[in-house]
Length: 461
Image 1: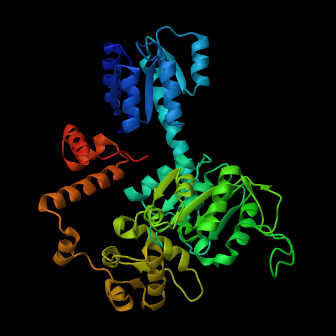
Image 2: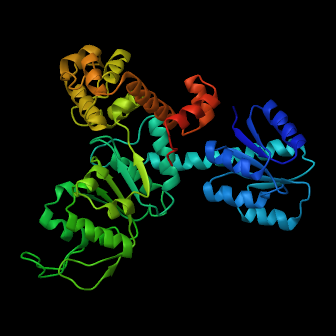
Image 3: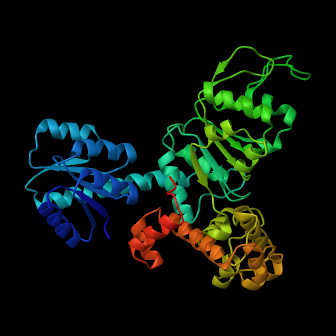
């Protein structure tokens, strides 16, 4: 398909004509008979382009346009009207429309406009993705590499949240790439030319955390021989990445909360507030909700940080990214002293994909480096992997492990839980597009809606 188009018009004949013409041209066309229906469809599925009538019963086109662009600032909308005026066209463009077409529609101009609008959206998305792809972790040498649905979903979220000032909470296992997500968000933000300052909260002694974050004044404590700026001031105008935020002491959490609420900090030993303009991105491998319940983490800080949650899946759930990651690591590491950029055989790649990678991408990088050093070459083979790498520490779950996972649940409860988890995973893979998910599952869309209702699955934003 060339792209997906939503036609919103209360005249059935117009809907049918546009669906027929655009369908012949290879576009996937969905129609809506009212502004309200159009908004619902767009929020549910998303489209590359919306053709929107100006004059309709109920919500008129200009109001729909405003709501569409508020929901999706990148929405491409072409307004169509049989009562076009210059003032209406100007207002539509001011409100975010890509173009304005008058009825009766000229098919040639319609197709040119449609193609231009869809190409404009795709070029903008590609530009953002290219910038996001430049986000390299300076100390690990790996980037957001891969084409799995899980990583594509993260890229989409990065592209949407990056240009905003919204705070982001990145969760995931150690080594899964949380820092890369934070760097990618910074790179696609208006703050990209300002500092990106990283703080590993787990690595700072508890007695030095406040000084590290907020700075200190001369004489604040033994050894404070001069005024010292903290990380908040160092990141002024840019992004502050608080890695492993779940390991912060409660006292430091309270001061971070105040900094987020008021936009000011007070250095240790000082009394004068210092205004800072910082976007905070936090990351953790902990279950913060469980920590809140046990009193280890402040609930108010959690809600301040968790404006936009992004979960990074472990490598074992996106093994389709392993070939691209291996190629990337070979390119990065193969040119180093005493190294050579060897080729991994197909069987070697398949062997790597079968491993559990409890250390995630970081563990894979280390494994590639070890193989480049120890494999005799010129290729890295499956036999080299068996010889060089230790046995997999976390083999796939066996029957006994599955029985333990089932616990005391009945067979029906276990099956329902598994089906619910499977449907959520497929919905995530397809960006919560109901039609595409239903096709992937091989079931009618109506059945999928019934499953969603049965398992009380709520759409993730």
